[in-house]
Image (cartoon, rainbow, N blue to C red; front, top):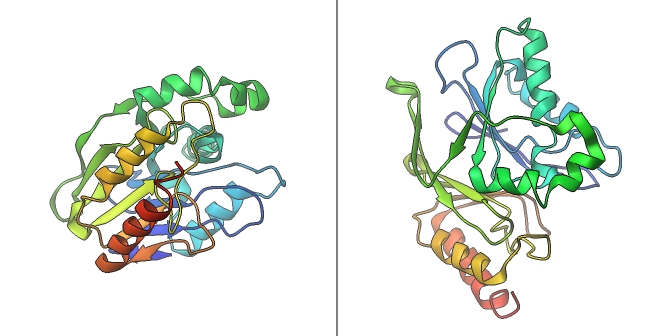
Length: 247
C-alpha cells in the first residue's frame, strides 16, 4: 500500500514469523527502477508463502518485482533476507539473465551472515546464498536524479544484531527502523550478537531524528506503522520508560 509519495509498505499479515517490507518505486535509472527493503522469508516456519504474498501485494499496487534493481537488508536475520536470492533468480529469469538486482547491506551484517548466522545457510542451503554488490556505511545514500532523486541516510544501529542499519528519508521524515524500534516495543537481544546497552544507545540515537513516520520491521500488538511527530516522540518515550530498565 502507498504510504507517501513513491514509498510503499507491505506489513506482514500472516500467522507465522516474517518481516515488513518497504518499496521505493521509480528511483533508480534504467530498466529496473525499484528498491525493496527487507524482502523477508520465502516461506516461514508455518509454510506460509511469504514471498508469493509480497509479490501479489506489489502487483496490486501496479508494479512488477521483475523491475526491482536493488535489495537492501537492514540486517541478516533469516526473516529479513531469505528471499534475496529467490528474487534475484526471478528477475534474472524474467529478463533472460540480462538484469540482476544488486544487494546491499552493511559489512558487519554480511560478516555475521557468514559467521554466527551461518546456521541458516546450513539449514536452507544454496537457496539463500548471495553475494553483496556493495556495503552500506553510515551517512548519505542517494539514487537517481532530477525529480526522481532519492536522498536517504544510513544510520548505524547495532544492538539487535551485528551491522544492523536503519534508513532515514529526510524529505518526508520517514524512519525505517528494522528490528531496533517497533510500535510500543523493541527488538530482542538474545540472539548471537545482541547487546542491550548497544540497543539502548541505538534507540537514543534514532530518537534524535525529526520523525513523522516510524516504519518498523515487524508489527506488534500496538500496531504496524506509526504516523505523526507527536506519536513518534511518545513511542520513543514509552520505550525508554518501560524497556530501558529491563534491556
